[in-house]
Length: 377
Image (cartoon, rainbow, N blue to C red; front, side):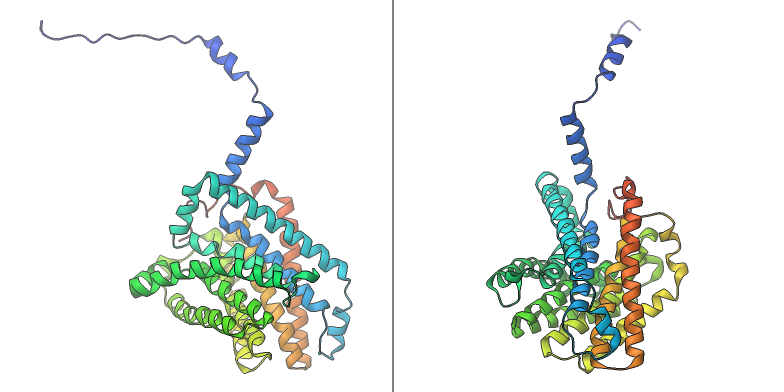
């Protein structure tokens, strides 16, 4: 018992007044701003580019509607009389939102590079990295500025700036699919993977408008081959293992966005809404009907506002845009009724999302965002 040593215990007493004095000190405006930006950049992810994606698609739709057309139907002529100022306002809003999101995400890359790296290495997060480049392509194609027409050098330069990141991401994603085989693809494939396909198809359409047919065919073939592989893989997926997070089920609308963009891209390449374009349009329309006939699938995701709601707008807008080209090619009553229904639905969905976003602006950056931490699949 004599060899047992008793440790010395030091009791530290902190004055309560000192703690209260420190807590009563108000943070300076600079500290508050720094905390806000830090929280903003940590919560901001590439999934927020859904907003710019939807607005860019809507701007392209309006430019198509008010532009010249060969359609002799009276409904199309009435639509073409819409004021040009609405399109200019919408395009300017799209440009502002996309520029703001791009600058914020660039700051995220500079100050939180590890979080961006985690997105790039994740099989879900990497798909959203296509969204900003798709958005820029849409704004480039719908630009009302004269020096950004397909015949100008500035259009060509911007096309290269937007196309190179898409190809780099293609090499990363498709290279893994090819080298790691079917087992890897069946594990990582999810509805957001179709954004990689859409990126190639939108780039192909922009190249075709410049007259670069070879580049357009290259990007189109790259996107469509992998779309066929992806479509079959997702068709055979196990719902109990590969289903998306309940709050993110709106991304299922990407199923009909890809064939919709494909039919428009092929039309730009061949210069006509031919049989292949019609087949892709009908496939997109069928998948759209298959989803809207199952509203219970989206019931829980609509219980609380989330930025994932913006996933509804872009696919519907693309389908409406394809319907205008179909109605122009097939000059009939049914085709124009279908066009008017889809146009009205597209505009209604976009306006509703804008209103809901303004009313729920405090919920745009939630602490429990299902995308943060990549809890999608």
